[in-house]
Length: 231
Image (cartoon, rainbow, N blue to C red; front, top):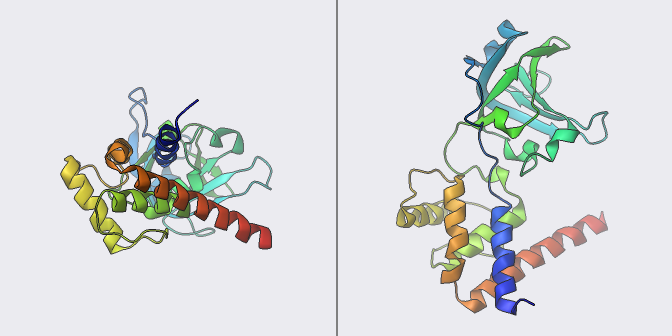
């Protein structure tokens, strides 16, 4: 049986790793012509890499096939291009793709098709999608995950408020200072290296701070469930 402190460390590490972003495409992805999302309609029937800004996302579990839609350049129904991820492929993504890819700059590789006059690519694997923008996009994290990240930074001595998942300039500055001390300032806030460095830093946190971090996370989860039950 694990000692209480060992269990606490494992839980914190496990929670940190749940926020790691999905990896980019693999080295085995064949090269494809790169086009902008607002020009994708010219490449119907071809396998290309479509790049552009995400303007809106949505997951619709009650529709047939449980689709996730990622719309580029403008929100539905004015989008120039759409990525479709069917429900049976969502489990391949480490995070919900509608949340992970919201407000990002993406490049997506696949065969361009059309649906109701709009070009789209059906994505079967996260390896088809590459996040191209840099910096921390907090929308990819849940409220509780932001509580955890801020509590870790505070426990390591950085000036950031704890107990809330609201992310502001102080949290950005704390994360930047942590990255600089770890030699990761060029990695970007969403880098897996930054998050792994935070996980490894758990051993630097005093035992009572580890317990407080875990307590904060569990309390926020409980508050979320209580609020949902009242609806």
